[in-house]
Length: 368
Image (tube, rainbow, N blue to C red; front, side, top):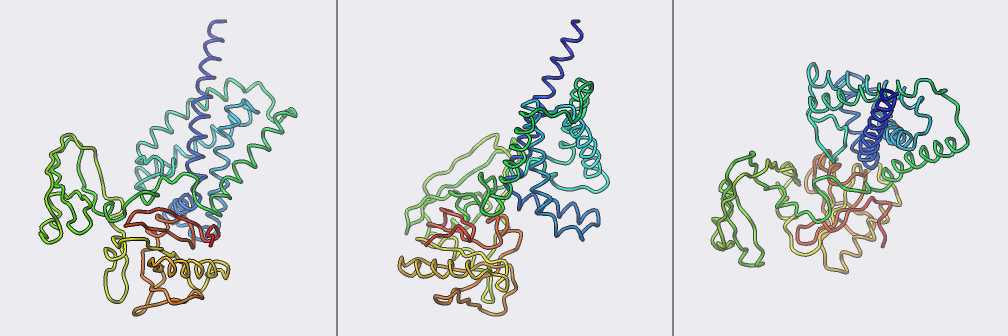
């Protein structure tokens, strides 16, 4: 009797851990279907299945929605016998996949928690190795139950979970992620993020604090960054030495805007005032409605005295301008993956205020 109670308690604990893990993992990915699709494409490319990449977006929404749905059903004890079978099968598959990713075909990040939490392939493998026995315990606990004996409440909950999780993924695909875990989130200064120092854990870091003579703004420099030596621009304020620094890497170090005249990154991302960045994946495939919205942004920028530029990964030949319907806009090249990291949409807008990201919008969400 005591063994039976202890096993039931253990099974409930395992069920709750699995439920929370599946919900968190599914949620962090389903709210960012663009990022999940990119990770799916990476795996398809690694395993030589590029022909399936056209379906990666739909698959990513379904896969992450199903994972979150499975967690919800475990949490609310809806047909646990059936869900425990899916849990065991999925854990067997992903444990084997992450073992391959950690050994035979290494990848940098498994993407199991989207952009919210980065795990190495080995960390992911050990995580799956810990969850697999829990899934087996839950399956064993509920194996006497019937698999498809849904009562009316379970039917309602199953349908509700299905539509909520799938709609969540579809909504974020049509708009932008509900929660932005990416480095280019609202409130970030792109130029400062590009020059964030790389410091290993436990190291001592010396930081030089200088004031911009013209703007009065403070900026921190590492010893390797010699821009502070411009005495006409920078005035020394303080020098700090910090011990036991956490590991930091410049997530935005690859951000670059160029055209035929050269690198325009600093000119644009450090420009005072407001700058509208119109992001276009392909001019040939730009929807007419999106072009009209961009045209309204261009007119609004002219009224405000703000600057507006167009960013695209599409090759540019010479100095290029594009007319969205209300005047020519200067275009600059940006790396395709960088643009997708900054804005999870084919076309959209990023608004800078004194170099700080103040707003990000999918093109369909731009309002005059």
